Length: 70
Image 1 (cartoon, rainbow, N blue to C red):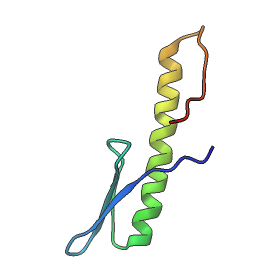
Image 2: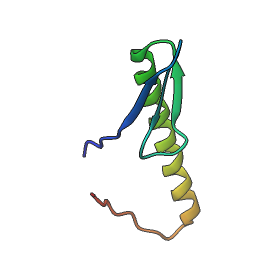
Image 3: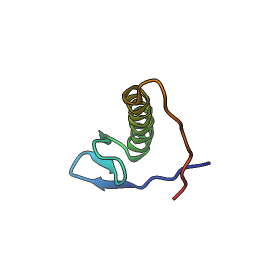
Image 4: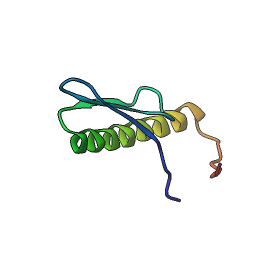
């Protein structure tokens, strides 16, 4: 499954800033738009991996996983 996320991107005076609509806390700032998009991708991957590890750790030993598409 190829997940899609939405980046909100804005040019300020001298910086490009952006954040992900669906994942709070994933935000970046770069001097160019392409650098910003790449930074957002990396930050999103890291956040999703961390959230995944955190959820599994919180579940303890006896749990199930199920894929849910929305």
